[in-house]
Every structure is written in C-alpha cells, then in structure tokens.
Image (cartoon, rainbow, N blue to C red; front, top):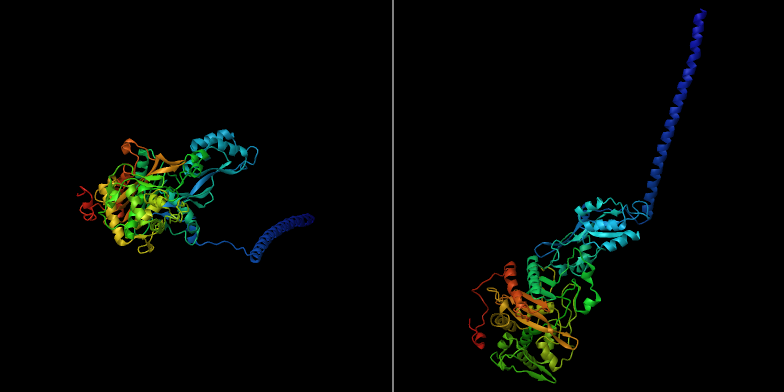
Length: 590
C-alpha cells in the first residue's frame, strides 16, 4: 500500500515538469510565429505605402507611365529609303559599339588589365582602320568614350576574348546602306547623333524619325540599276583620262525625276571619315574638294559649247533665226580689245546646222548678237540659270550670273558658255526643256506618281523644241558627238570643252569636258549629262582632252546599258526626220 502510494506520488511529481516544458515550447513557437507575421505585415505595409506614394506622385505630377502599342514597338527607329523599285537604300539595324568604361573594374586609376598600348594594338588587329595612337590617348585619358562604332558580331566576340572588362559592347541602332557608296551623294549619311546629313537623309530627317510616318519606306526617284551604270561609266572615263573628278545626271524630261545622280570621287556613307567632309587647307588651295562635295548640284562651271544649242533655240524662238540656209560669217569677231575665235578654222561661212555640228564660237556669237542681250538674258532666267538649281538637296551652288545689264560682249560669250557658271543640274533641266516640247520643270529626287509631274513653265515653243531635236541629233550623227551615237538609241547632244578660269585669265591646260545628251530624239525620254573635271590626254582618249574624245564616249557606252532598263529598246528602223536639214550639210545623206 505504501509502495503504491509512493509510486503514485512520484508520478504526480514528474507530470507537471513535462507540462511546463511543453507549454514553454508552445509559447516560444507562438511568439516566433507572431514576430514573423509582424515582419511580413510590416513589409507589406511598406510596399503598400510606397505604391500609394507612387500613385500619389503620378497623380499630382503630370508624368504618366509610358505605354506603347505593339505596332509602335515594331517600328524602326528611323524610316527606310528605297529606290523607285523598292530596292533598299538605307535602313536601321541593331549593331554594337565599342565603349570604353574606365570604372568597370572599380579602380579608375588602373582600369585595364593590360597596358593601354597593348590593348590598343590588340584592338587594331580586330579593327585594321583603328588609329592606334588616338586609341592609346583615349584609354590613358581615363574618360568614358566610344572607341569604335558599328561593330560586327564576330568582331564583338573577339573583343570579349581580350578579357578587358572596361571594353564594353552596348547594343544600339545603326544606319546601314546596303549599296555601299553607290548613290552616296543622293542619300547622304546619318551622324553619330542620329541626324541626317548632306543628302536626302537630311532633307527627310523629320519624316524618317516621325513615329506616325517612319513605318512607311520612302521611295526616291532614282533607279539603282541606272545609278550603278552611270557611276561605273563615269569612273571608267575619269580613271582612263586621269581626271580629278567626274559628274553625271540622268533626268526624265517629262517629269523632272532624277533617275541617277553621281559625283566622283564618292564616299561610303557606312563609314564617313573626317577627310570625306573637310580637306586640309593646302589641298583646298589646289582646287581639290572633299569626297562628300556634290559636283552635280553644288559646283558651278563654265560649261562651254553645251550652251550653243540653248542660244540657237532662243534665237529660233524669237524669230531671229528663220532661214536655216543662211550662211553666217565665221571669221573672228573683234569686240573692243577682245577677239572671239574658233578653236580652228571651220570655213569662212557656216549655216546654223554647220555651226552646231562643228561647234563654231563665232557664228553662235553673231546669232546671239542679232538676238540681243535682253532676250538672251530672259531665256537664261526662264531656264533657271540665275538661281540655285531646283532640287531637294541642301547642297546647291549659286551660279555666277552676269547681272542685270549685259554688255554686247557678255551676251556673245554667254552664248557659247563663257562668262556664266552653272551646275551640271542647271544644264540638265535646261536641255530637258529644250527637247520635251519647251516646258521647264524643276528636278526632283522624290518618286512621282503617274500624273503628278509639276506643270512647269513654258520657255520655248513646241515648234522650236522640234527643230532643236533635229539639230541635236545631227550633231551626234555628223558632228562632234559621233562617239555618243549609240546604235539604235537615236542619241542627240552637244559637246562642250571649256578652259577653267584662274588667276590672270583662263588656264589652257585645265578643261571641263561635258557632253549633254537626250534620247531617243524622235520621242525624247531622258537627258544625260556626263562631265569630266580636268581630264588629261591619254591613250584611251587618243591623247585628246576635249569632250568629243572623253565625255561623249561615256554617254555612248552608257545609253545602251540604261536604255532597256528604262523602257527604251534599240530600234535601227526608226529615227527622227532630218530630211529638211540634211541638204544643208554637204555629203550628209546617210
């Protein structure tokens, strides 16, 4: 009995101790759980408070969260340029840039693992055009800066392999010109700030960056097949005669659309260098111009005998020339202390057709003298010769215009392309008016829809234009333009070889050689201008420097290449009717 009582007492004594420990554990767990709940609640409260404050800030300020539609996100950052057939000329694409970040390692005093010269040398192996000395200076300066723009993915991987954390490769949008340097003076380029420069990139900058309009490609008037052929033939002509430059343009005579425009030497808009934009002073003093300079629209020249048909057209239109059989005195003309002569003896008397075929200064000057300076001046003004050329490009040269009152001598010299300096584009627009029925229209680099050509202004009567088509064709068949007479394409045109002015007068050793043409002359569609700046007499030009031997052959090779592309096929069975003028040329019957 006592034993049982004792055992029961022992049991009753142990139970309360276990209960105390169990209760303490539960209370501790509960306290921990409550503390955790409190922390979670506090975190949620802070998040809620931050959200409320943010909402309040947005509500009180006028700043909202930017939202963009899927369509907007898919738009290119800059609109695309195409040729008239949809061939891409300029488009945006993702690229890399090589950026130097001296803080990447956290030690601005020692940002590179290797030395700056070693890193620069290794980078030059990846980018051969890199200026090593300039790169070393950038790396040693300790300032964040671009080292290379437009890095290809393969080159980016090679940069990563260098193991330099300070050489970063951020992804950014770049402008790419798939055709390379082709059409560079038409397109221009985009600078590092994303702004268009020089060409249509500058003209259309607002449209190409406007979110409402940049999704639609902008078609230009040029045809890249024609552009490529023009550049190729101009380059061949320039190199074969050692000329310092060349220029050419192909213009639709009825709409003013520029089918191709080229200025050589060219530049590559994918990688524009400082020398493309600015030349050293000593080179500028020698008459050189940077590659980005547009000789077609920005450089003015005395274009010589290419003006003679314009002067004759003005005289025909005014009724000064009526009798094409009349024979004009072709001997030298004395005006004050100046004398006007021909390059060589052409005969004592010439009719109008002969004077153009043989390119007589004296006969053209006498015709202009009979026409008078007022009518000549007005015709030139109507052809746009007194103003900058009409085209969208920002670089447009101001002509050297003789002013208001033309003395007798100035009127006579202008008739054969001296004493007035214009751009090749001026000449192209004037020839278009002369052959298209007499209507001058501004040139444009925008593709025009059918029927959207500007009305233009009438300069010549339709009958005058018809007569000039005959005369221009005769020059190519019988005269100085024979080397441009591409079989089956009925080319007509006029040569011009003008000495360049210099200090103390004209420089006899420096010529500008030009051929101004149109085709097909029975129904003109296009004007072609080819010009060489200071060509030399070489084997390719039979050691001659004049346009008959260098500029005219360019057109003769070019027209068969571009004619079929533009819908003009060779046809030996057709030609313009010259039967009423051919009897005026001894032995002219074909």
